[in-house]
Structure formats: C-alpha cells, structure tokens
Image: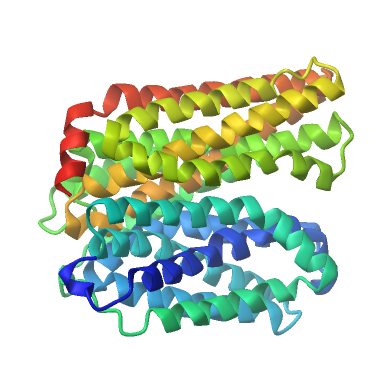
Length: 466
C-alpha cells in the first residue's frame, strides 16, 4: 500500500470495499427476482413494482459520473462512508412499512448510494494500492461486482422463500455497518482538493438531463415503442444536450468533466469495449426467457444452466489480472470478448434437440463467463491507470456508467427482438437464435474497439510505471 496508508491493513480495506459494492450488486439488484413478493407486501400494481425494480439502476446510471466528480473534490473515503449510510437508510425505507411512497424513495436512495460507491471505491483502490497489489485489488473489486450480480437472483430467491424478502435488506444493513467499521480511521487521500467556489453547476445540470434522456430511451424504448413520440423527443434532446454540453464545457476554466479525458485513446477504448461487452447482460435475460419459453424449464432450472458462467468468471478474473503484467492489458481485452462472443454464438444453436442444446449451452456459458472474467480487470485497470490521479473518480464513474447503460441497452435490444419476432408469427427457437446472434455481433464490436482504439505499447508502459 502507499505511504498514506502504511498503517492500515490492505486486507481490511479490500474487505470493506467488497462489502460496500455488494450493497448494490447483490442486495439492491435482488429486486429483479422478488417482484411478486414485493407486490404482495405492498398491495400495489405490477406497474409500480416494475418501476421500483428499474428505479435503482436508472438513478445509479444517471448520477454515477456526478458522484465520481464529487469524490474527486470532496474525498473518496468520505463519499464512500456517505454512500454506506445512504444504503442503510434506503434499506430501512424498504422494510419499516408497507408504504409505496417509501418503497420508491428507498429505491432512489439505494441508487444514489450505488452511484457514489462505485467510482469512490475504484478511486480508493487506485490511490491506496500500487503496482501488482493494485491489479490484485481491482480483481477483487471485479469479483465483488460480477460475483454479486451472478448470485443475486439465486440469493434473493432463497432468502425470500425460506425467510422473507425483508431479510435481504436486514443483512445489507448489517454488512454496511461492518464496512463502515472497517473503514474507520482510514485516512483521506492526499489528492483531495477543496471544493471550488466555481463548481460547474450548469454543466452538471446539462449532463444529468443528457444521461437521463438516453437512459430512459434505452430502458423504456422497447416498452413504449422505439418510434413513439416520447422516445423520439428524448433522443433529440440527448443529441442537443451533447452539442450544448461540449460547447459549454470547452469554454469553462473548471468544467464539470475535463474533455481532455476523451483524448486518451486507451481510456476511450476501455470505456467503449466495456459498454459493448456489458450488453451481454441482455444475453442472460434472453437465455432465461428462451429456456423457460422454448425449453419449458423452470426458473430454477434455467438459473442452474447459467451457473457455469458465474463459476468460470470468478475463476478467470485473477488470470486476467496476471496477464496484464506478462502480456499487457490489451491482449486480454481482445481475447476475452472473443471467448464471450463464442459463448453467445453457441447459445444461438436453438435448432438442436433439447438434450444436445443444454450441453452446448453449458459449454457456451463456460466460454461466456471465462471471456468476461478475462476482460474485467484489464479493462478496469486500463481506465484507472491511464487517467490522472485527480480525475480517477469521474473517469471511473464514466467507465461504470458504461457498464450500467451497456447492460440496459443489451436487455432492451435483445428482449425486444425476441418478443417482436415471436409476435410476427415466428417460432421461439428462431426468435432466440436471432437474438443471440445480435448479442454476438455487439460483443464482436467490443473486440474491435479494444483491437483498433487501444495502443498496445502505450498501455504496457503506463501499467509498469504505475
């Protein structure tokens, strides 16, 4: 660890960070699998439940870059503590009453907590670890995020079935308190700057409107129609905001986001490849739809078929970390998505008989998880290590926002293609196959982003000097 934290245990810090990010990836995301339980408890409509499910991810995606900017200015450790307190408050709002307003407010608070935690904890890793230890710490960060996501559906179902859905958030509160205890006495980064009196509130407002508009289009467009008036109006608003934001930020001495970040080819390549690889979240959603609708499997059986994805991913994450030192980050960022695309392509062989397809799907899940695991740490390390230390918060916020929007985009595109083809009179098998092929193409675009945008030698040099 760095001189700034030489008296603070590295394992203690990593435990606190992993517990912190689990408040979103494992606990807040569990809402995806307990919708009927929520509806029964709150005696509300399915529409309200659906809003509560998607609300946290929406708020997280919209405010993550804003939170990253604040963590750079106010302090990464301070912001992480604030986020954990917000997570506790949000969890309490969900479980202390059956009030629908508190339910929705609690999900918003959970979203704000997650938006702060992700860039702040990545910044803490970058600041408080050096060299090989930094790569190792980033691997554990990735394991916490991907592991939490992979376990959230199974974990939520088990807790809701055998105890109660409220117990999920009681446990989240307990682990948040433990994370706060572990972070006690952790010194703040020496790189923290005092908040400027000239903070760019106009830039912040334009940016929030810009991200909120495109987030709504991505997450709701397939429901209300890609050519509906709200979708088209918000799409136009998004492009107008891009133009206004660019012009306004160029004229500011202290802009909300330093546009110099986007001249950094390794960083841009990592963000774009990360966005495209995370469209694979849509593949998992599509596979569950096809397995239950086409193969007539139960939700539990479909979930079991995706377990090799999670297991392989967690096993390979550390391999991706070790490959950075030997080969540089770019190679893993190209090879990883190739395996991911191969795995998704195997899912598209829906013309096979059911027993054979299940075998092929299990092999596909192994390739899918292995490729994603190989990509995870090198991509995160590239985004962090090629960015000036005082901008890591906002840079990692943009990087993780790419993950959130990429996942939402993948789900929207693949599920809308699947349902659209079925509604046109085609078979479930045809719809599933085409949806998976589209997913394969999106991930291959991620391969191209890594291969064409990221310069090999430059990445190797910066990682060694960091």
